[in-house]
Structures are given as structure tokens and as C-alpha cells.
Image (cartoon, rainbow, N blue to C red; front, side, top):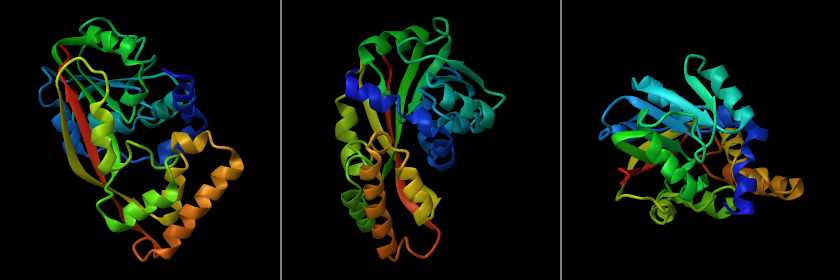
Length: 250
């Protein structure tokens, strides 16, 4: 992983509480599809963060274990999901034995992995016939005001995998061993203008931005949301999809 990517990937712990509060969960239908070819119910949430995907796995009846390298994010996961086995580790050094899980899922995390190292590690912990799936929550930029929000926000807040129009191309280039299948599922999140600004403030590009630039960017987003009838009058549903890349590693 290049230095800039490592800086971005390690930025989330400073905003772990805000991440837990504001980041969306994952569409249950997307998680079901990710798991439908897995040979069993043992699922590893890899790069689990504060447990957004882990919680959906638990709700669907999976036997879930979470692995996360950042101690602040892991603390939030353990606080919110005290009955889930949650371990310190990374995609490049998974603290599980060989063939111990039927599926490895990564929620908004697969693109952070050093896949040259993580790929063999994931293959090691997967049981025969096991599945790897990356899931991403993306904004539905087919909606006019969402496309406008993307333009105002800039790539630090809404990046190259954060909209329907771009995530497919971005994930198709990931160096994975096996034939990938892509799918997307309708999703949404109840937001206010304030909570949407808080959500975008937890994006990696925003977290590493100099404070003056960050506040200027958030100010532009606030002004845009205040100017739109869809978002200026209280609660609204943010149009989203959960995109899934599913692979059965060779």
C-alpha cells in the first residue's frame, strides 16, 4: 500500500465515535447475496471498523467474527456488539486458523487491503468453496440533487467509489484471484442536513485535510443542503445503494 493510502486508511480511529454514529449500515439483501454461495454460516468481517457490517451479519443469523486493526474502532465495535468475537488484526495478518470461515466480507474496506499480501491470507482462512465479498455503500447519483452534492463536495468527501456512476469501474480493477460478480441493492439512510454533513466529515479524505480547508469544504456542503428543497426542511432519506463484489477465490 502506498504511503498516501496508508495515511488515509489509518485516519478513521480519530473519528471512531462519529463513524459509529453517522456511517450507514448495509442493505440486508446485499449481505444475503454476498453470502448465498458460501458453504456455511461462519463469516469473517475483515476490516470491520465499528461493526456496521458485523451488526447486519448478526441480524441475519451468521456466526460472525470481526477483525479490525485500529484500537479505537475496535473499542466502538466491542461496545456496540459485546457478544461478537472481535479481534485485533488486519487483512494482511488475520488472527484465525486455516479454513476457519466460510466467507470473508469487507464493508467499505477491501480497497484498503494490500491484496498481494491479503489475498493469500484470505485464501488461507477460507474453507473450501468459501466466498470473498466486498461491500460498498454508494450514493445514488442518478438522483439530481445527489449528483449536485457530489459536485459541491469534491473528491475528499465523495470519492471514486462513493457513487453508483463510479464504483463499478473502481472495484473492477482490484487485483483479485477469481472471477468477480457485481451487483447492487437499493438502500437509504434517514438523515438531516446536519447529520449528513457529519457523515461526510468522517470520510478519509476529509479526516486528513488541513482544518481550514476541511471547514471550508463542509461549509460549501452545508450551504448546498440548505439551498435544496429535498434537504432543507428536516429529515430526508439519502438515496443510496449497497454495491457488492463477490468472488470465489481460486
